[in-house]
Length: 409
Ligand code: 5CA
Ligand code: ZN
Image (cartoon, rainbow, N blue to C red):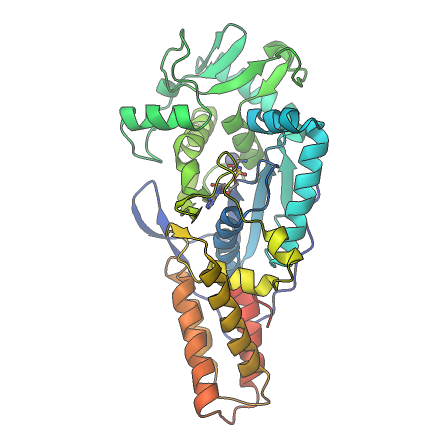
C-alpha cells in the first residue's frame, strides 16, 4: 500500500538526545541506543471509524519517537500495518450493507488525509494484512512443523506454552489474561483448545466470508497477531527498537505477537521496548468504535479547526496518561496556537537557544510533550512581556516546533 506524503522536517542547530522511554515489559524506563537506523513497528488501524482522536493521540506519540530519533541524525525505518481484513471490519461492512474492501479503502484513504493534515511522518512500509498473506502462510506452516501450533476443527492455533518467554510483555497473571483475551478478540471458552489463551493463527474459510489459498493450511484467513509479526519480521527483523500501540494492545496483541516471533526465530526479545499510549475518553468512557463515542479528526477539520490546534491538543497530554477529550481541551489548544503564532510573527525576540535544548530534553525524557509545550509557552510569554533583540529567534522557534513537535506555526 502507499502511505501518505511526508512533511519536511527542518534541520536544527546542534544534535538531539537519546530517547529514554517507558517499556511495558520491564515496567520502567529504558534508554534506547539504536544503531544508525532506528527500527519501529506501530500497529495501524482497522479501517472503519477512522480517524478518531484516540487513534490520533496514539500515532502522535510514535511520531514524536521518530522526531526525536531524526534529531539525533539517525535514519528511521518505520513500519505500520492496516488490518484490512478482520471480524469487526467484516461485521461493520455487513451492518452497513457495503463491500468490506470498499469500506477498508475508503477509511484508509481518510486516515491518510488525517495523518497528512496532522503532519504525522509516514512509515516507509505501509502494509495491508491482505497483501501480507503470502508471507504469513509459511510462518504458520513453520510453527506447525515446530510443534508450536495445532489444529482444531480446521482452524490452527498457536500454543502459548511453546514460548518460555510468554507473559513477559504484559506481565499479567493468567486470570487477567483470560479476561482480556475474551474482551479483545480471543476465544478462551472454545472447547478443545490446549490452553484457553491460545490465539488463532489461521482461520479456516467460513461460509460467506473472504478466504485465501493457504497452501497446506487450506483456504482461510490469518489471525490478527501473526499478521503484524509477519510484517514486522519481513521489514525490520528481530530485536527492533520499539513495538508501539495503544495500551489496549499490550495484551493479547503484543504479547502474542512477541511469542510468535520468539518461537519462530529462537531469538529474544522481539523488541527492545514495548511502548503503549494511554486511552483517550469521551463522556467518561474510552473512545471506542464499539461504543460509538467518537470525535473524528476529519469532522474537526471540516468544521474549520486548524490541524495544528488538534495536534497541540494531543501534545498537551502525556502520551502514557489516560485523558478525556473535551471542548475545553480544544479551546486551550486554539488559544495556545494563537499565542505562539503571534510570538513568532515578530521580527525579533528573546534568544531561543535554551528553548531548543529544553524541548529536546523534555521529549527525550519519555516523550514529555507537556513539558515541551510549557517551555515554548515561557518563551512566548517573554516575547509578550519584554520582547528581545535576537533576529534569528522567531525562526528558530518556528523550526524547532515544526521539527520536534510536528506543529506548523
Ligand atoms: N488494527 C489493530 C492493530 S494491529 C487496531 O488496534 N486497530 S484500531 O483501529 O482499533 O486502533 C488503532 C490504534 O489506535 C491502536 O494502537 C489502538 O491501541 C489505538 N487506540 C484505539 N482507541 C484508542 C483510544 N481511545 N485512545 C488511544 N488510542 C486508541
Ligand atoms: Zn498490530
